[in-house]
Length: 205
Image 1 (cartoon, rainbow, N blue to C red):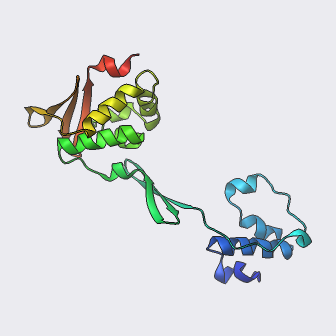
Image 2: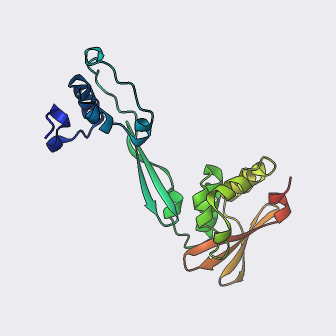
Image 3: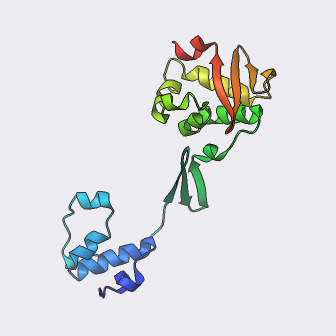
């Protein structure tokens, strides 16, 4: 059993301070295998040149800047980050929402455009269209320099107030946003964005 203080098997380092203390203790004890084990997989690839034990200074008090967590789920990942103020969701929150009404779908659509949440946009596509797209392809389409400003204007229009709705039938509705029209359809997974018209405004320079 290892006997490196906080680095022993019965009390593996958990906090940032404990990890740094364990790293210093391992180098001072000449246990470079343990020092290597405390590195991330990416850092291990670099093959660091370890300092001599006599050159290792005692660490000062650590200040944790941030910590991240990632929750993989159907439709994307929820990414959280912890800073001084506590844990906060950094990305993916829109993917947790099921649009139960056309208004909710329009709100999610606008927020996803403005926040560049392309996984949320992917989740808002109808089931038949989703296999043709990826988050990266949507990013290329929505971030194209020639049309990005138009998408932002559409999203801001949707955020500016309730869009007038015209029901086509019980499962389809049109929302008027200035000169544009957003067509939504209802599926088992909630309301989805079927089309944005006129298409030429959002696909051409």
